[in-house]
Image (tube, rainbow, N blue to C red):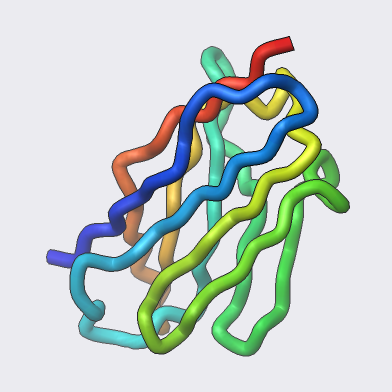
Length: 117
């Protein structure tokens, strides 16, 4: 069973920065095509924050463009999210996601990010 282990969440003031990291506990049986981060705020649906293909293409939610940067190491199956200029509306549980070549999704347990005003 592949597990994604996240780290780096916490409490920060508005305007501050946090860096989230995610690593697979072991290599999945098939190559990972897509790795990314989702978030879910209380009472809201889970939404995509940022994703990156194995070829290096990045996709960001409009709300985080220019503030967040996603990066990954394909060989190590790790993905990071650098979050700058954080806003209170960024407060949520952030989930790491990986999708293999057959479309199977793997999820982390979630890490809380709280931005105080």
